[in-house]
Every structure is written in structure tokens, then in C-alpha cells.
Amino acid sequence: MARARTRQEIGSPIDAAIKDRSEEFSLVARRLEPEHFGKYVMINLQSGDYVIASTISDVHLKFIEAFGAETAGCCLRIGASPFAAA
Image 1 (cartoon, rainbow, N blue to C red):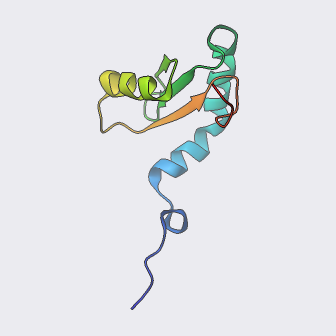
Image 2: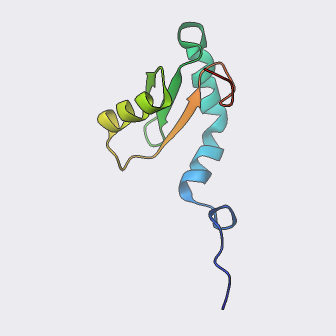
């Protein structure tokens, strides 16, 4: 029986969209940095619109409220590594 391929091996349209627009997303985060440092931004992959919140949970909830649960998005921490302490 053949081994199932992983998501990384297969790739996905969402992964491709994020990779293709990663520089654009970084520019959005940098533009927001002076006023929103340390907060989270979640960007709609289709429209480029975004929401901002203080926690990753809050930004996800705001994103769902604004764009719907089926909409693909990319979440970034503004002005800080995603691995930095809050």
C-alpha cells in the first residue's frame, strides 16, 4: 500500500497564495507597526482586507466575523517574531 503524502509534499492553494503574497503581507505588517506593535493582523487572502487585535484568538474571531469561517487568511504578529513572548 502506498504511503499517504503530507500536506507539505502535496502543497495547497492556500500555501501557494501565502508564498506568492508573503512580501505584500510583510509590507502591510510593517506599515501597521508604529501604531499596532505587538498586535496581530489577519489578512484576507482574496481581498487583502485585514483585521487587527491584541491576541491571536481575538484576531481570528474578528476575521471570522468580518469575512466568514470559510475565508482563507494569513495571520502575522506586527513588528515582532511570531515566537516572541507577548
